[in-house]
Figure 1: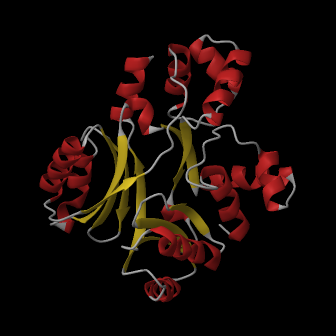
Figure 2: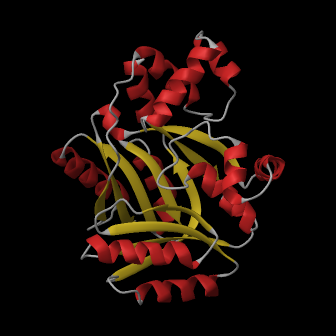
Length: 299
């Protein structure tokens, strides 16, 4: 993936945090990047053919499920058993995404209904990973002003595994007219109810994909300034999540590990940054078992 490939994928999956328009058009991406629509279409097709991006999932705003969202950053106690530990963590209710780093590191995104529920999920993940003292922080999502009806939930259920399928395919699967599907998806996007999650295959990347966890304890303006400095520093940012009060994460591609190490040192020197940590990506696991059950209960 060259710089333009990364910018296109970023626009489709995460222009802000996250991408709420699951039907984002190639023409819209092309206009923002100053290229032609066919270039965007061709680059995305090539990314899927080469396996650098294997697909797009539909995810749900946690507020629609009566939940909040949080991240856990931890290290497993036994690297040799990491694969089996990850398999067990996938079964924990509320887990929706696992970033599996090289070595012992994991970063887990989860939905939870209450502070007590978050504590219980955290304890369960600690026990399954033989980890102690994971770092946890809340991710802030906007609150939609609408309540999805059963038709909406049927559409979401159909699109969970393939967010970019055609409206005609969604219509055939749900028995809902194309016009209604299009109208309801437009409303859901405008109300920030569902969002896109790309599935990259890091082993097919040229270069090193790294995730930086940045801790700014003062929060507020000093954190915003640090976030903006990091976002402006390099073009090859795959995604970013800066919604936490004190923590932000950034995923970036580098030509080599030396560049990544230098960038980590630069982040650590920013005003307001107390601590920064780098993980080298091995795989991103999107977990939809629990989410699918919740969607189908409502559909």
